[in-house]
Image (cartoon, rainbow, N blue to C red; front, side, top):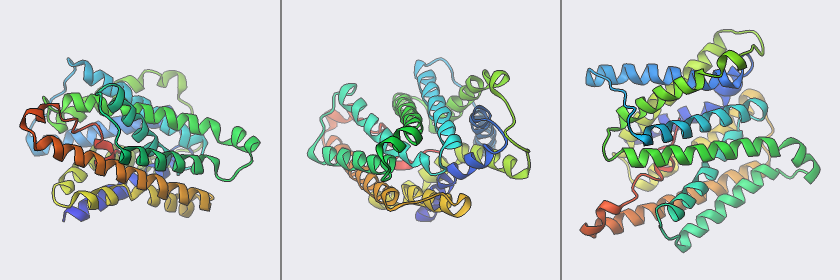
Length: 313
């Protein structure tokens, strides 16, 4: 059952690029961003209302706002990058966010990077380079790829700050309330520019509405499904299955939009998946080491890489 839940969550995440690309045929990226949060709050709020008979929105902690700003940054630049680029482009966000999380752990949390950590960074960077370069001449890369690469880089920075906020909030707040609060304030933040940015890119039909609602459902529900599954399967299996959405994203991009998936893209995806798995193994080793020392448990940075363990919708 646990493996099935993780596969379902990973499958949901793999459709993000396809849904964003479909929605961008009719509406602008700002509308897509707001819709992801609005429908996410709607679905998650209904889920919590049925499950716990109540919902609560927090706003007093500064980490709520830091996490909300980070998540807004993540979705704004990811949606814009997919809208003007390829549907599979957001596969870059995961390894880039891993690198930024390593920097945060080193500079802010004062952790040391082990040889395994440096190897993970090497694999991630090599994979990112292969996907960004894609065998293109330098002039073509600068003209066609550098803008979308920058957008996905900014999206990855947003993920890093969102996860840092989650790390600081989880000791005092349950996961459902925390995410509902973050998404609620994100929806208010992203609605502000809509009067100035909203425009139609094409005819609005049922496919576009389904894509927007699907993105919201993924944002609001997928992490719950994956969290339950993570408790029931071995760690390494959960990491590999949870990150399989990267390869599935490439398949859907080819199948639905006939986008070119070259050997450079596939090789890069495999390399940074190896890097992410190595980094997760390193994090697991750190947690076990801290757990053996009771006096150090309070210092355990156990949530900073939650994205790589559980994914993010």
